[in-house]
Length: 405
Image (tube, rainbow, N blue to C red):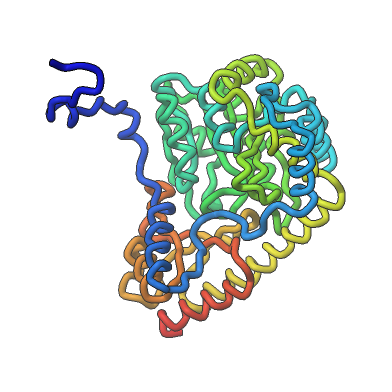
């Protein structure tokens, strides 16, 4: 007699529910797979220099830690409103005024559980089933997966060095079709570290607007600029949706905190989605993030930005000297997108094989272009300089020995 706790037949125990078909549209994340392989080597005693994962080696500065400690002491750890605490939304709006000269109504700011939640909310609000969304190729892989997860169809447009690996207004004219709903851009970009020139970004916004579409711009790396001061896409109209994060410039990756700026007419829709999908972002992280905008903290962040620039200015010429071509100088973020076809190595031109060889033979973790789209992914590798300057020097020396340079 079967009863509570009775063993199930063998066939029943092996049965598994059918997975949703959307899983098939999500490709493996090679960055994380390579990180696991590097971790295995480290467990054998190898010393690996990590230049793969895009995470600042800096962590939250002391004023942010102190604000988090004080928030814990005061017990402000319960749910917040779905759009975020008022003080933080006001601080973010003030930051736009200070840095970009923009007057942004705090009501338009939606605080999220990281930029990933922000992108998911944006796609959930704007993308219907089978809607096509244009984005550059190469681009951050999760961006296309957010579109696919909301049953849209990402359309990757080949974007080479001639366009700084970015989408152009002319691309929109050529690729906009009857099912196209909008564009999803990133400036500066992961994996290339390149930004869209302000005049071109304005042309893109106007081209999309003329077609009744949406423009989503991922600006999570915009605080990390090294040449010309950046211009936010918000400068070109309040119909643009922008995504930002406390992870990169503010060095708070594991705190999982980001934000959106949304058009005034969409605030209610985003709030309803946020309430149902996430309830709210971390209350502790929100109260800690208030300290990010204090003058003493901004001074720390600006010093760190200049350190990233120093690393870039060392690394790009060094890579070129040992045989890795850098066709476009990155002007933001902390990535170099290098063409590996001319590398003095038998695996040159096959980024997957080359990065594996570099990991095992030189102890340096880099990322093949396979994650980032279909535009010549085996010709390119992504190199992160979000690691200490002495380690960059050691990594270049190891690569030079491997390449016989």
